[in-house]
Image (cartoon, rainbow over the protein chains, first blue to last red):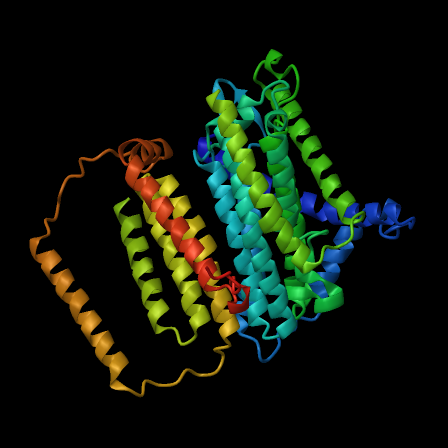
Amino acid sequence: MSELTFKIIFIVAVFGISLFVAMYTTYAERKLAAFLQDRLGPNRAGPFGILQPLADGVKLFFKEEFIPRVSDRLLFIAGPAIFMCTALMTSAVIPFAPDLEINGTTYAMQAADLNVGILYLFGVVSLGVYGILVGGWASNNKFSLLGAIRAASQNISYELAMGLSIVSLVMVSSSLSLRDIVDQQSGWAWNILYQPLGFLIFIVCAFAETNRAPFDLPECETELIGGYHTEFSSMKLGLYLFAEYIHVFISSAVLASLYFGGYQFPFVSDLDPGPVKTLLGGLVMFAKTGFFIFLFIWIRWTLPRFRYDQLMNLGWKVLIPLAVLNVLITALFILF
Amino acid sequence: MDKIFYVLAALTLITAFMVVISRHPIRSVLFLVATFFLISAQYILLNAQFLALVNIIVYAGAIMVLFLFVIMFLNLSRDLERFSSWMPIAAAGISIGGIGLLLLSAFRVAQTNVEYTGNPEAGLVEQIGEVLYRDFLFPMEVCSVLFLVAMIGIVLLNRKERELPSKIPLS
């Protein structure tokens, strides 16, 4: 199998896995929410309701497509598309498993090993705002616009703290490539042990960047009806909602690989590189990712929503100074 | 590589023209974002991944979002008024003339078919870091102080009048 064929198969597989995980995250979210609120949750479609995501998808596809007459048609369609594309693009630089060696050829379990992988992640995340802004503005509805503006200002504010927390992580690992960062954390040398504060800042920012509770102000029903996707119907709404779950999956994978060793697990270096190691590493990676997805859901159904001024104060007056402090502390540790 | 360059260059020029031609400012901004993307693609062709991504993060990801933000608040959905005075037309004429003159003089002395002899890895993180933090450390720090001053100045200018210290005790 040539390098190119493998890459194509791998990219399609990652695409499929992202969609599949996102699909079942919706199911997990509803089941866990039901559990936390002492309800049953979806249990009609299939055993334990495991076909519910399929039913939801089919329903969304067959709903009536409605584009408001006063909207900017082209941008109205482009909005959800941009949002979905940027959500899916982030998975390109995540190393999902150790290298696979068969008959002397090495297959990297990563779509692209960029030497500036972290910056790529950061760039794509910062582009996610366009999907929301364009869609919200093109709806020509003041509630949509307000939701979009809220989402954009929230993302811009939290990107700064997120970037600063990544700066200190990069200082520790002195590499911008995700693969190098994961490889450095073999055994128990996880980055969370060196960067506890950075991890805390990063995870709070990840919650804000994915627009999830307790930071789900952009789609706050009580004030904004539905937020930036008020005017969207059918699969366009589906894309917006679904992209959020892809964001959750990717953020979890990034958290796992940046701070929790990715596919590394104790005694990993004792194994020979081969299918067993790759499979085990991949499973460990997905277990860690699954834990973070669980955390995302758990927090959503536990904490109430912030007020908007609280959100901004937290971002600008707490997280950014803390992140700067973290950079300084890290620099001092590296110097002495 | 050459073919990719020409395709990218053509697309860059088209999107850049669309920025100017578009009737609606929001579309202009989006075309400008596309232009930045294409310029980043050119950087990648030159093996400068770091510059390409920083270009996207800073321009497409931050500055243009702020542009979009401001334009959305301006409520420009109705047709813009036509040029009524001669001033903008004169200004446009002068700037186009100036740029044309500049281009002409540049092309007159420009050499084609020059072999590139610089470092092909000049755009990677390590090289840029060394240049910025070793060779040009002082100018770089001065620049950052300059940015800080500009930022503080803007915050100060935008403070509301009543929040300024009004009761400074005399004497």
